[in-house]
Each structure stands twice: as C-alpha cells, then as structure tokens.
Amino acid sequence: MSDLETLSASVTALEESIATTNGGLDVFYLLFAGAMVFFMQAGFAMLCAGSIRAKNVKNIMLKNILDACGGAVGFWTIGYAFAYGGADSSKLTFIGNSDFVLANIHDGGSLIGWFFQFAFAATAATIVAGTVAERCKFEAYIAYSLMLTGFVYPVVVHSIWSSSGFLSAFTDDENKFLGSGMIDFAGSGVVHMTGGATALFAAKILGPRIGRFYDADGNELPEPVSFPPHSVALQVLGTFILWVGWYGFNPGSTLGISPAGYADVAALCAVTTTLAAASGSVSAMMTDMLMTRKATGETMYDITMCMNGALSGLVGITAGCSVCEPWA
Image (tube, rainbow, N blue to C red; front, side, top):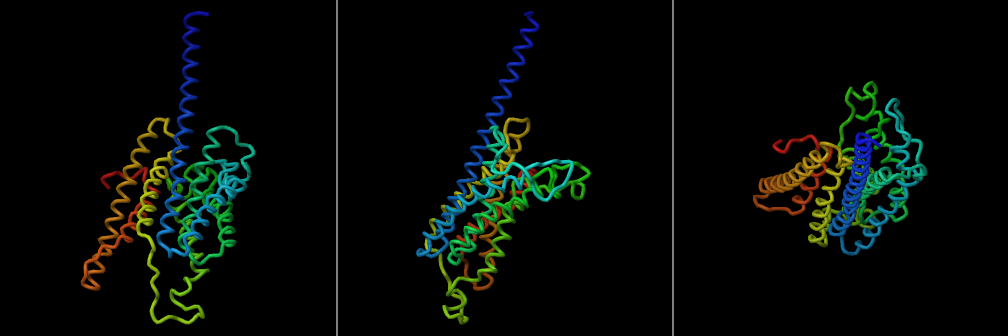
C-alpha cells in the first residue's frame, strides 16, 4: 500500500471515528436534556402539592405519577407514530401512519429522539393536573392522560413539527403555510398552549370545587370561599425545579450539539430563558403590587404572582428563545 493510500485510509478511519463520537455526543446531549425535561414532573408535583389543601396532596401526587406513566404508554403505543411516523416533506398529512410501538426504530438517535419527545408529551399532560386538582375522578384523569398523549398532543405536534404537517416550517417550500410555516422552537404553542387549552375545557366541564362558590347542596354562597395553599415552600420549590428543567426544554430543542452552530443556539436559548423568567417574575409582582395599591392604598408583594410571572415568562419565551436577542 502506498503512502497516499495509507493516508487516505487513515483519514477515512478518522472521519468515521469523529462521526461516531459526534453521534454519541448528540445522544448523550438529548439524554441529559430529556432527563431535565422529565424532572419537570417533580416541579409540577411540588407546585400542585403546595397549592392545594393538605387533605388532597396524596391524590394529586398519584395523578402526577400516573401522568408520566400514562404519557409513556400512550406516546409509545400510538402517540409517536401519529406525531412523526412516515413524515414526507413532499406531501401534507393529518397524522403519521408508521412506527407504532417503535416497531421499526432501532438506532440510538431515533430511540433517544422518542425519549426526548415523550418528556415533552408528559409535560403537556401534567399542565392540566393543577387545573383539575381536588375535583377530578381518578378514572377520568387516567382516560384524559392517555387520550392527550396518544392522540390530541401528537396531532398538534404533527401539524407543526413534522415535515408533513400543514403548519410546518420543515416541509417543502410550496407546501409551507403563508410561505414560511409556523416557527415554534421549543413548544410555547405545541406543548403549553395545548395543555392550557385542555385545562380550560377541563375546568369548564368540571366546574369549581365544592364549597368555593356553592355549598354541598348547590346553593350559591354570599361570598366566594378562599382555599389558601397549604405550603408556600413546596410552591417555591416546584417553581425553581420547573425553571431548572426549562434549561433542558429550550436549549435541548436544538436536538443535537455537535453540528456547527448548534452550541451557539443552545447558549442563546439558555440566556433568553433566564432573562424571560426573571423579567416575568418581577413584572408580574410589581404590576400586582401597583394594582393592589391603587385599589386598597396598601403596598403588598404577592409571592404567588412572583412565581406565576416566572412561569409565564418561561412559557412565553419557549417559542422564540432561539431567535430573540438578549438585548431585546
């Protein structure tokens, strides 16, 4: 073998080694980011537990655990197939039609992709838990969790993130909605609005908690009864866990770290995510303080508004975290 052939073989072997290393690096990156997103389940659990009465904590904890379990089963059996199966950028489809129960998925990149997307699906399902706390039957909640992760959420995902979706920015140019498609980098609409809309319908169907506006006999109370949270500490802990989890949610949505420029996007996402949470928290608290002062003449700083503002800022930046400049 000549020196040139030896050099060529060495270069080929080096390229293969780099490709393998990059592939493993991307898998590990998604594993880490997906684990952080899944850890948000603990944040939702703590936030819900702290926000309700002590007598109902065990019930809401069970529902949070079953959100993760139901989400895994629903997304494994049909959800992922409906969301991404058979994607083809040359045509638009309503839902996917292949890869049920991950039957044809074997490589590490695709498997870790399912894990990352499952964590997102479970997040969409858990958003509803706090809305229906203290007034939803166990059986109904399980049915909802399976339906959301198995069908409702995957249909939204397919429409926006699959290359065959009618709103997708990843389909062929002639198929793009309004010439560009919908840009939702990490899921402000796909994940959080889907969960929020589901929560709105659930709240409308279930109605208020017994004793809040009506007594046990259905008679309207003269004044609404306040149900104060039983543990502010758990609420704050849950908020911080969710904030930390968002660093897997947003930067992790690059879906890789080895390609050129991906690290820059992930870093930008981390910065904009931080600024959005901090700004949302302060803005909500100060706005509430000014409104309270105007109405009552007293100056009060509400920690609930502080926490909700942070979470609202995180939800709001999720779609555009990869394109917003830090100064903006």
